[in-house]
Length: 436
Picture 1 (cartoon, one colour):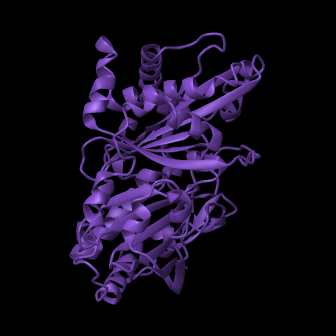
Picture 2 (cartoon, helix red, strand yellow; picture 1 turned 30 degrees about the horizontal axis):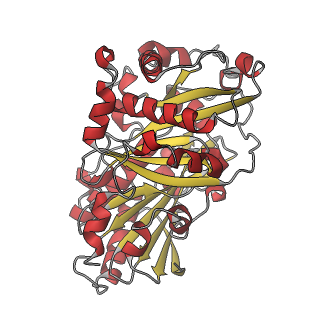
């Protein structure tokens, strides 16, 4: 697939940001994130097969509604200064338009190299963030389908904040009424002030990272939950335990002295003692940690119990502890240090779930997306599993990033494959392949 950029514009807010809102201090959680882009990719089917007549109209609709939305999400039109604050100067957001020389089904119907293909649709690569907050690229396919790729900087936003922005942009485009758009709450630095701590820019190993998607049906997830009986685990906990256990079984054969540490992201907004906390914009994610002793081999149910306990500890008291002035800010680096001294290799695995959030509600006026996924990441996302909802709402789509050799071993694991849907590509993709 070839993708040719046909235009680049800078979209500025439709109304200027008031002077008293032009400085947004980054909070403690923002400090712990690197200035890297996270790419979300949305695919929309053509209104009729082969219809390319509406591309100009849709493009103008997207640009106007983006300008209106940026007047509400005004920090996104600014620039990050010294990784410390956002200067809300209305410099605007880069908006690219591009033409792909294929049909949409040519890329979303193939899982093998889709990570590399998806990256051709992105406005930026992961390390291009710098002082930017977000970038947009609208890709038009020969079939009339459209892909909107948005890269947001993790320095200023977590995934839930991005979804708040993107869904607001879609709502503005669809109804043209800003009064129906949610009003984000900025100023997390008032709740979690920045701390005196070194910048977190770790050295990365140079591994070949492979991206795959695996769909688990609701019936498969129910079967996994039932395995743990009285533990009363959630679907996310059951699926996390299954993936973690199969990853260990598939990859530990050649490295028996590996030690595994598991980190599960937890949205802190419901745990704040604040009204309308769901509208806070920025990074607001805690981490539930499971670090078993190096000498103990955990079964799935044991892991589920430990994970439930760890997630349960990310509560209101956890939040208040993070707000303490005397918090030891080096706890991220210290985590698991003692265990690392006892083993030859430490493998960290991270889970993030967006399976209960509205990824498929972004309707710009021509229908909801037929697929939402992520672009390929570098080594910073090694050993990560992201849980997305499926377009049909039946099950969970897992976006897995592993070292190439680990992915090969996992895909060869018969027990793992027994629970994966027959096709690893989301079902709605094939429903459209014959008509596009």
